[in-house]
Length: 180
Image: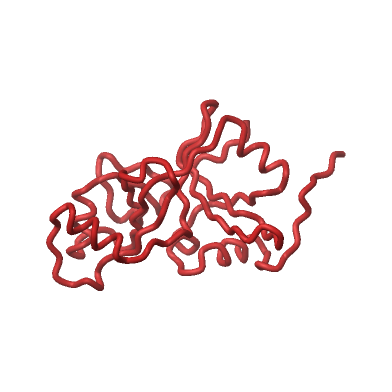
């Protein structure tokens, strides 16, 4: 089994598909994979509604971070992908520079500007069946990339991820692989 845990999957440029995904895989084993879509940004009203529902006080609305649609599973659960300058006992280290945390107290700290330097709130997650990612990698549907803050905390994450692999959104990648 290919190890893609704690890696980023970047959908390959394909003119017939018009779906550009960047997914951080945070769990990958023989039972399947769990990931977070990083490039589906929800309207800021979702974050305001969440904060108001949780009764969190804030004074500066500009401090609020973006909120992402992480996938169609567990939409009532949020996670925070953030720089590793802030960690809790429940933080999952992704790299030396990034952590993933599911914590209401961290969200509160971010809102009052006491949390990590960089953070993204993500609602829901994506699931993959056992072997699905390996099959899709074989079909050249994904590129694999190391997660870095420079890739993750950008406005154009899909384009930026492609550039890191030496590609552009207009690059052509064949949907078949060769065998030697």
